[in-house]
Image (cartoon, rainbow, N blue to C red; front, side, top):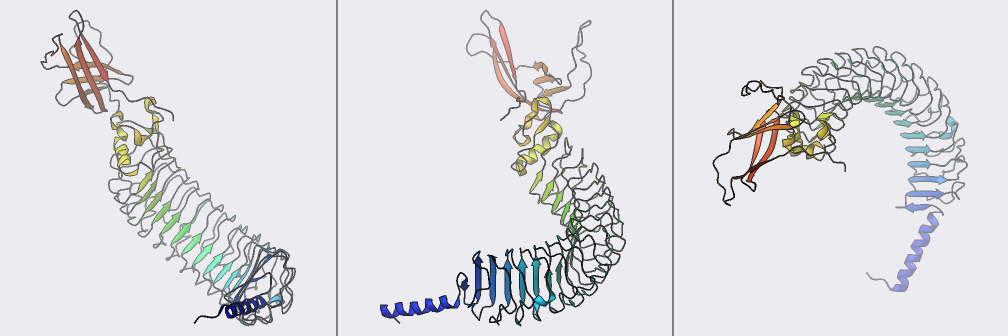
Length: 549
């Protein structure tokens, strides 16, 4: 249907007028049910809010107070959010008369106290967020009128103490976040009513100890965060009863030791984070009770060794992080049964050598970090069984670029050159500073032990310095003797060859010579000098001098 232009303009005016009247300035309305109010000019609840609004947001306003019955005309409200309203104050009954309200959030205010009367009777409230404000405490009966709460977020306040029975009526609570509050301790039976709780976060609350059995009533708990506290020890049985726990965060505490049975009652644990503590050792049986562990983080501790068999029952583990410790040795077969392991981080430890079969059973390994150790070489074929290995981080090790590194250099060039472009030679001096992936294979030579004395010396002739390495071609035509400083003796058995120029003897040829020390290239040129004398020239390819770029 096509409307005449005057009629169309009239309809547009009516519609715009209707919407403008239903959405008070400076708020904006969306879909007729969502209202967004923002701006410092807003100092009170605007009049004329749409009666059918279901979601209402106040963001960065100058609201000073929310008075009793402020939203009485919004009977359909299900979500009410206050973000970064620093002057906000909530009076008694501020949220009264909201039978459908399911989500309430007040974040980023200077609210220091909250009366239980502010909520009225919010019987349908499921999610309550009171975060990053200035709350210093909670009234014992604050949540008595919100019995249906499933998620309660109180992180980022200034709460120092909690009434022992403040959660007594929240028997349906699934998520509780108390992080980033200066509590230092929690009442011993604070969580007793929360049998259905699944997530408990106590990060950065200053805990120095855990009351015995505090978590035992939480039979449904799946995630527990105790990170960034000051826990120096964990009581025996600290996690008993938490058979459904899947994630345990203990990073950045002050733990110096762990009892072998600390995690013995966690059969469903998937993620364990011990990073950033002061652990110098891990008990051999620490992980026997966690057969489903998939992620283990123990970086930035003081570990000097790993017990034999500590990972023996972790057939499902995918990630092990042991970075930034003091490890210098790995027990034989320590990773033997980890067929699912994809990520292994051993960087920034004190390893000087690794056994050739260290990683042979890690058939799923994709990422291996060995950077920042004291490795000078790796055994030949150390990665031969790791078909899915995407790359190995090798930088910041004192690599000795000789024949012992030839196999590794070849592997890097074929598989992981971009990742290891910053893997530099530390020695010998002639190669110091060279990037291993860019170094020609023939430069990776070794100095062998001195051989027997040359029996061809004439009586009375002084024995020359022994050559640690003798290079030759397969036919034995050319031999080149070298020591650690330079090459000194070249022997060439020339085949008959005439001079096509008629000026005398001439010879010019190239060889690739091999020895147990490595490979070198040699070029020999012989030509006649004026007067009939022949001059021999030899050109031996030496490793290049390191460059600075």
